Image 1 (cartoon, rainbow, N blue to C red):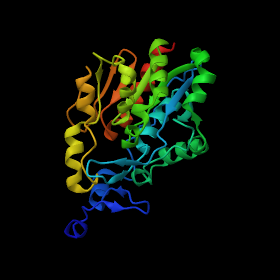
Image 2: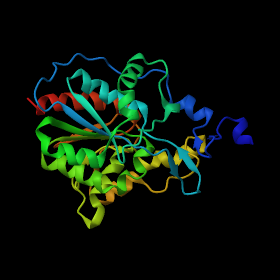
Image 3: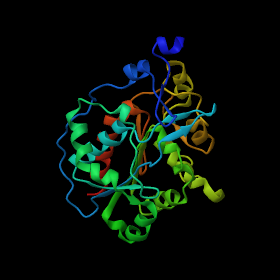
Image 4: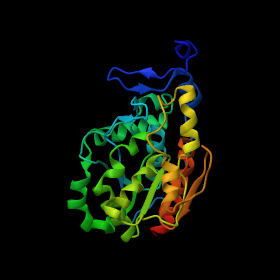
Length: 284
């Protein structure tokens, strides 16, 4: 009751899950982003497609049994897309089974005209995405048309996607065909799929940025998460051989070979700029 009075109690949703508290939303969800509307020299070559792998899952089970109401973080998904679109690239939206992509609508920047515009532009694609198996069967023989695979952040990226063999197949396809792989925050949870069936971690020895476990461990105190995370993502990636480039929730972005990563929602704009620049440079 005291936590509720102080505004630090997570909000109980109608399905029994919890979204962030009033205080957490006030501290971490601005109405507008730091998006920079940059005019890039647009790419006009053949490799103009980017596969966006979104989560179709909403509820992440915490260690205490409570569920966090999550999905794809709208800023972490849409800001990079804005930059990549401005650079001349197009998107194919996919989820594991073709169910609609789920967004953390409580995190949507309600007064950001640019974010609202691109969300509305691709809303029908988010609602009726491809399935990963469909993408594999129809698009793998067209690798020359693709520039990158993008896995947005949001805690929802840790539900099902790290255990999905199709995700492993697509990440290895991108790697083998020298496509860029882009992700940020909790999106690199998808990289764990490359260890399925006792395979060696695809990004062993790579430098990458990811949301730090230390911050996830602190957020239940202000009611952002309703409990401790089921496991620590950054430490798990580190244990597999990744070199972590950040220890804080900040604007850190990193490029290592064809892997482009960012540390948190605060890095969304920087990741978009870096990805657009690298894709333009790498696909001349």
